[in-house]
Amino acid sequence: MSKIRARLIVLNFSICLFLISFFSDAQQIIVPPYLQPGNASTLTKEQKVLIWQTDSIPGKYKVEFALGSFGQKVSVAKTTFVKLNLNNKTTFLYRASLTGLKFDSEYSYRVSLNEQTITEGSFSTRSKKQQTKFAVFGDCGAGTPQQAEIAYQVFQQKPQFVLVTGDNVYRSGLESEYRKNFFPYYSSKEASPLTGAPLMQSVPFYMLLGNHDVYGSDFDKTPDGLAYFYYNDLPLNGPSTELTVTVEGSEGKVKAFKSNSGSRFPKMSNFSFDQGNVHIVCLDANPYTNPLDPTLVQWLSEDLRNSKADWKIVSYHHPGFNSSKAHYDYQQMRLLSPVLEQLGVDLVLTGHVHNYQRTLPLTFDPQKNSTGTQYLISNEGRVDGKFMLDEKFDGITNTKPKGIIYIVTGAGGAPLYDPTLSGKPELWKHDPQQNWVPFTAKIISDKHSFTMIETIGKRLVLKQYDAKGIILDEITVTK
Ligand SMILES: [Fe+2]
Image (cartoon, rainbow, N blue to C red):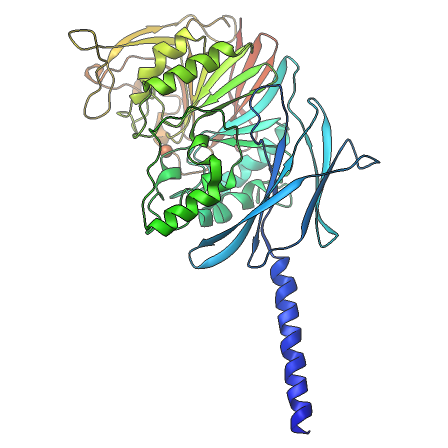
C-alpha cells in the first residue's frame, strides 16, 4: 500500500470517528424532556416549560405544541439553553417555554432534533374548576426501590400535579444526584413498580427547598450544588427576602451559577400558585430563614388574603409539630402558626421526618418574653406555647376542624425514621417539659407512603397510600 493511500485511509477513518462522535454526542440526551409549571401562579395566565439536558455538543432542537392533537395550528416554543461546566464536564440545559395556553385544556407536544422527533407527549393545563387532585411526598430522591414503587403508585393515581416537600435528592442537592436519584424514577420510560413511571413527561412537579437541597452551596466543594435552581421552573412571585441560602466558592463559580440559574435564584425559594380551587404557598424553612421575617410575613399575608380559593394550603420542609424522635427539637416553624391561622390556612404539608404524621386540628400561641415583645425560641430550636386541640374532629363523622391540620409526609423514598412508632400512641410521647402535648392523631412510620389530596368545592379528602397502593389513612374535611 502506498504511503499516500495509507494516509488517506487514516484521514477518512479520523473523519468518520469525528462524525460519529459529533452525532452521538449531539444526540446524547442525559435528562429527557420533562414538564415544569413555569412562572405561572394565579389563574390569569397559563404556561408550561419543557426542560432537558444533553451532553457535550449543542443540538438544533425544536419544540412544537398544539391544542388537542397535532392538527393545523401548531405553535413553536421559544427555546433557550445554558452551557453548564460542572465537575469538569460540559452539558447543555435547554428550556422551551410553551406560552399562551388555555386553561382546562389538553395539549400535545413534540421535541425534535435536526427535524427528527425525539420525544412526544401531552399534558393538561391548570384548571379553573372548583376541584383538584394532586400528590404530595417528600424526602424521596434517595435511589431506593421504595422510591420507584411510590413513583409508580403516584402515576396510577393520575394527579394533576405533584408537590415534593423538600429533600428532593440525596445527599446534597447536586446536579449529578438529580440525574442518578431523581429523573430515572419520575421520568422512567416504562411505568413499573421496579423502575418508576414517566410522570414528569405529563405532570408538573412543584418542589421546595429542604435541608439536603441546600447542602451543596459551596461550589468549591460541590461545583454542581443547588441544582434545584437549574432543574426547576416555578412561579417567581415570592418575596425579595434576603434570608436565603448563601452561595460560597470562587468568584468564577458563583458567577457562573448565578448566570445559569438566572432570575430563579434566589426568587424560587418561596412561591405560590393556584390550581382549581386550591391555593398553595411553598416556603423555604431552612435555619437561615426566619418565619417571622417582616418581608416574608407581609408577602404571605397579601398572597393569602388575595386568594379566593376554597382551600388554602402552606407547604414547607421542616415540621413544627412532630411527635417522632427524629428532628423533634426543630420547631422554628411553629412561630408562623398564628399568622397562618389568621389567614385562614386549612392544611400544612411538610416532610423532613421520614414517616407520615397527621395532627389533630390545632391552634398554637407561641410564648413571648416577659415584656410581650418577642417570641421565645430555645437554643435547641424548641418553641413553647399554648395549644388548643380539636379532639372532636375525626375526619369521618366530624369533618369541620377547628384549627389547622399539620401533615408530615416524608416517607417518599429515603430510609424511614422511628418505624416502631406505628400504631403505638404511647410511644409518641415526649417530655411535657419539652413542650409536647398529644397533638398527633396518626403516625405511620413502618411503611413508605405518599399523600393524595382531592377537593370538590368545599370538600377535601386526604388519603395516605403505601408503596403498594393500599390506603393507610383517610380524612374528609368540609367547610
Ligand atoms: Fe430534611
